[in-house]
Image 1: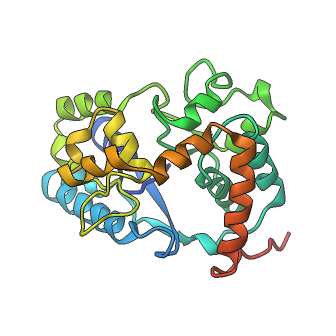
Image 2 (image 1 turned 60 degrees about the horizontal axis):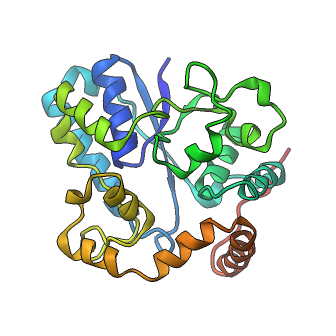
Length: 266
């Protein structure tokens, strides 16, 4: 059976993808959620990165390339609304900050009956801080003993194979396995400027702070040091109650310009 994997064309998910294909000789079924270009301008760059990685994989490792299924894509607005999952997410925010993608990814898996979707949460991720006390002994999934905890209920359908790895460790292992050149084709910036990483979006900030600053151009690194709004967002993540109020306002503003998700038929 193919391993279900959220693949965005980014560093972490591509490392896991290539590890499954080249090191573990596994079949992989990638998934990708498409957001509005207005809110996520990086969608074209991410899709191009995935195309280039597939192309390079086929050229160098054709036997592995045939084990990589076509990506299943879904528009964010096509994911069913789910008040229970939203409630779990909001309770998690009261404990610590995690990105909104985990809420709609949980909804997507629930809607399509997917158990074991692999997420590339790694050692320096904000989400890892929230989940560290709940991970099971094999460091791969959350322990079922915590059923009922909002964190468990939100993340119970996911597998977390990179939970204890850093980006630098991934870089070292990719080099040892011989696929480090493909890792250079990955894309991470959410708001590119003139086709280059901006240096101020969260993925750019994390890339710089987790030891891969060389992947951000000099102009982006300069913006990173001069950033203001990203510092405000970072400060908000340390105050979950205030963040939730700001997020609620943002959701209301966004809903006025983007169609809401369809209501579940069940």
